[in-house]
Length: 136
Image 1 (cartoon, rainbow, N blue to C red):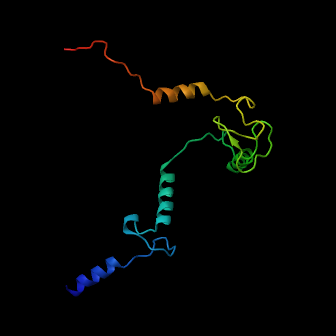
Image 2 (image 1 turned 180 degrees about the vertical axis):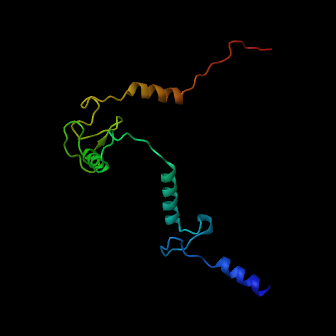
Image 3 (image 1 turned 60 degrees about the vertical axis):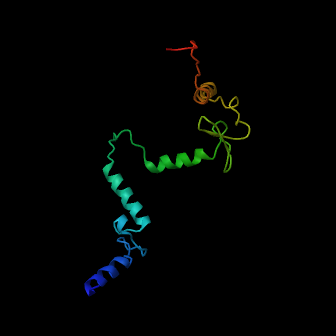
């Protein structure tokens, strides 16, 4: 091996630091970023590519919208009682306290019969035998 070939091998084997300067080692497969910084770069690129048109009249301040979601997540949808960490989730997508957890108690709008029929159709396909014993 020549001296130049040894230098090339040494440089390719030595790990490079992340481009973002976070202190971790980068990878050539991830454009010399570490895995964490590469994910951030990908998220920024996809957010730049995604363009959403929104009317100014219809916009709701994002801060207020998030605070409403957090408050309703831990409370019963019917009586607004705190349900703690777990709560009882229903198929309709709401969480309820122990008194209102049953579908009859909170006037659930989820169609259980249709969901059951769909499961039965999926699990039990139609089996039809030939009516003629001998076919040509």
